[in-house]
Image (tube, one colour):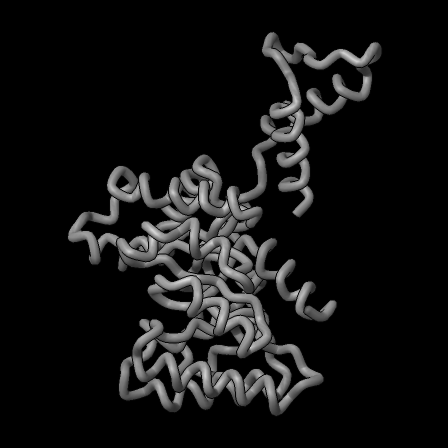
Amino acid sequence: MTATHDVAVRHVQEARSLLFVPGDRPDRFDKAGAAGADLVIIDLEDAVAPGRRPGAREAATEWLASGGTAAVRVNAVGTADHDLDVAALTKLVAGHPDQHALLAVVVAKAEGSADLSGLAHRVGAPVVPLLETARGVQRAAELAEAQGVARLAFGHLDYALDLGAAPTRQAMLHARSMLVQASRAAGLPGPVDGVTAELDDFDRLVDDVAHGVELGFTGKLLIHPRQVEPTHAAYRPTSEEVAWAERVIAAVEAATGGRGALRVDGAMVDRPVIVRAETTLRRRDQ
């Protein structure tokens, strides 16, 4: 892989906010890019009516060819639209070998590891499988290990529909935990959580982010530019968390004699706690 590909992988893996923009609304592409999201995803799937997908496909590739930078969500493997989406992206990459506007391909309703690896090889970009079905979630570990996969993402609304369940936290807890565990076992960063559909309820958005962070998620799918800044703020640790982390690190730096465990605020501090403190301070600086 090239150095540019490695940069794209890091970009995708470090993104906290991943903002969808409908592929049939090219007038919104630049606005999405200016909204401050870590990664923009041009959506060729659910946000676009089937009859408008050919135009969306063309609009997305034209914008990327003209200097735009984004990921693209393609339709599910096994559909005619998936084949057309991938053909368009392959043509884009082949026609502009010196441009690297395609940061990643997000695969809707991902279920097969061979499909993901083949796609990553074909388009030369990192792949983000969006797990939205029972079969996909059941195969989370296999998908996370697939060559070319940079990160997992969870589509909880479609997953709940597939199960015939409500998209509540309790009903989705097992699946979310499976994605976190699969990501860790494969050496990937924490996965990306699903959208908060309530566009004007920022308290709900912040609470959803906090719930995801508690479980081990490190990014979130967004559907409106207004959700970007609250999401970034929610990923930053509180002042109390920062103060605790600073006390832990200060105690470590002051320790002498090679002690394996320390005491801070009346609690034992060993290696896992130190790593947590270091992670908190990195989140503060993002």
